[in-house]
Image (cartoon, rainbow, N blue to C red; front, side, top):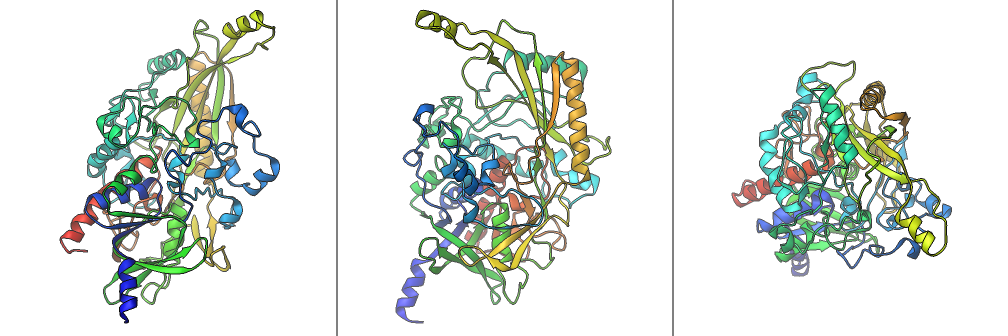
Length: 570
């Protein structure tokens, strides 16, 4: 090898490579660089810098060209992303067009992409609940999927580690199904939410209404000011990007922290093609990267590789990483790579009105809601469906008066509006069961814009999901009725799998290499220097929002990787 080639390779060699800069990728970069490792952070999308690259963050509604609405011709370019709850005129620059990532839907599936530094950490819902042992032991108890190789005690210290840095608002509720964390000052419930909490407690012993737990700085601590973040302003414009850093995103928090170490190289516009495996060392040696602008391919080398590209992309990269040793994808001796995909079902919604507490209304904005943790099939199997669901609970009062008048009379009407009854509602988030038939795989012919095989997605609802939906409607109708709510209505939203960003599975953790891809430290069983800590690693989905668990698993695995590397075990 010539001196020129050797020198060139040295400039492309790092201690660690992280693929993906979103929720978990940012945490991998932070922990690896703090551990002293020179780290390359690869992001396939454009660069987005905190504060300066949030173009709509401070715009008033009338300053948006279409007052927040997306014109039809643009919506057609984003036909998939436009079905996401956060997609509007002021946020659409943080979503990818259909043409940016073509894929084959064998069954209807909404694959939502955030192609920029920070990924979907800029547009996430920010709900952050810990899992309990009821969640980690679920597959072992009911026999569906495989047993998790960890339990709550293994990850609890890492939940605390992440929560203190991120900043989580919440209340210590003392619930076995939803362990308490390291909380900042909780948001307040409305009077109607407090009323409903008391009504549920008076009628049920196994159901609880609590204030939600969310990644917002209600009471910033020194660690948050050190990150350059400030108190949440309760603007509820979060998906635009927060110039205050009031909610957690990779852009505002972990990536800048990693950059300060001087150990991080952040490289946007880098589309990962595959990971290269060396049969002599039984390790991965490098990552093939295509420049998003020039389409030139380059290899980058490292001793440790973290794959955090988001669940479906992580599966795609590993499936495309073939060799003589792994003809069906990196680490895929079991043939399970890309199988047992799962997600959260958001199809259920229940709304009603309440004619009490009419002397009160809400004050200001709250980027949170109340929350009802799972209460079905917790201690034992008690229904004809597996697992269960959690739900939000929210309340508001809408103005029913048309504000008329001129001058003083108009001012008086605006200051003293006539309000109607309270509007209340709940949205379901249900666990789905990972199945062998729920798969993603590479198309043998179709390619994307960079010559990489397109992904074929075959994931759908099943009979268990329909039973859960029916039970949610029945139980919440009963709870609302007992609380004295009126005009109760149920709605199947028809949301497709994937539409809420909670795709999981395909590279699941487990004890046995024959039934899983990753061990208890998120390493590939058959390629120990490759780690997967995003949604792809999940063995089951639970009923909690998954992002906090992704971050905790990532911090745990990254610290383990640093120790292993320094002890020369990797």
